[in-house]
Image 1 (tube, helix red, strand yellow):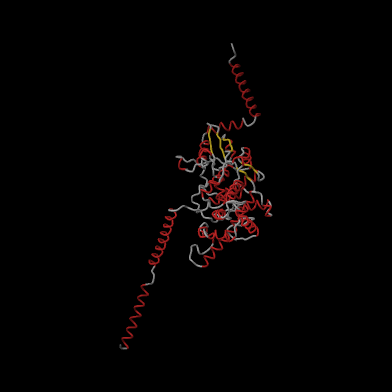
Image 2 (cartoon, rainbow, N blue to C red; image 1 turned 45 degrees about the vertical axis):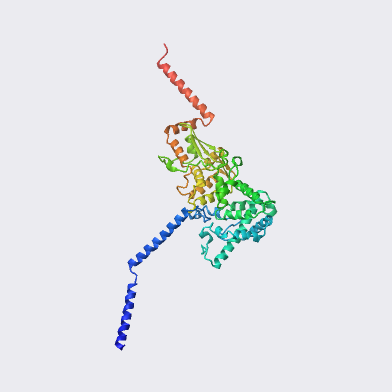
Length: 483
């Protein structure tokens, strides 16, 4: 090959390379097509995940508090644990209190620490799926087979063992008044008890079941004893007067596969024990707002307005927060029944966390039962006078302090409730509004309220009527004297 041919060959190769480079320079159209394909791929992937979730049972994962509530000025006092930190939220803590409780449980169980740890590790992959990925804050959201993933599972198993044992021992000791043996005073016990119902202080209830499964059939501490202890512990925290508590929640929460202790507390508050239905739950809340052909806007604002309209408040005498009913007795008399509630220093934290749990974005099956109850009371309470009326009707039992404090409590919790989360009592509110829309009902009720509120006003009314009648009679006979 001549020198000229070599030069031409090199020039041809350079020309081909330039042409190839020019062909692969992405244009605006190429970039747009790439973005379209990326979006389509993501949407297809989400579609497949939706189909998979529809084909299996929806499971609520343990997750963070909704940001709308976390950022509220009232929330920080309600969701941060004060005595015992549980689970992977924020900073995992192996404090002395938990180690002492866990050691006592292991001793009472008759098992070794390793036996219980192995039982947890046998289901650790399943247990890890009970947490939202953001909660675990680990970049291996799936099993990649690496040592780091296995190390992380081991860490999670040890954490769940310590927390699960300490929770079970505390519940057992609290219920059977054995906390003094562990040098835990009543004040500290009350704080721990409240901490166990914080949304960001939970572990899967399945962990407690695994640990209870390892207990012997006979002995001082058995699965049956602990199940009964949990049942009593939930009843102790239901915020419901003892005289309205009926039935047991053991079979109920076993069938429902609860997520955690807070989930069981919520179920207990919305559970109706019906002896005529073999003890099964019956729900009397109206859940279908579309069942009303005509939707009415609700203009009533507080209990004072209910009184003016002739609506009497009464306790439902039941422990289910869903048992809110409204009955009209004609034009000017009606009755609103509301389940009773004990208000103390723990009520605010429990209700706030229950509302947060129902408002979680992924808790799509929530019927907002507790949120609706809180919203109803928030709408009825504007001042301490409203709280006084609720106390007089035996609906609220104020163990907190002044009536003003109770009014502030419900107004604070209801402050962040999103519109549309209070529909459990929609039909009840519609019936109340229909009663308000009756002009005769309001007029007659106002007349009765004004002149029959005490004997003296009633006597004064009768005197005025008598004087008016005598005046009319005298005037008539003056104009028309008898012949």
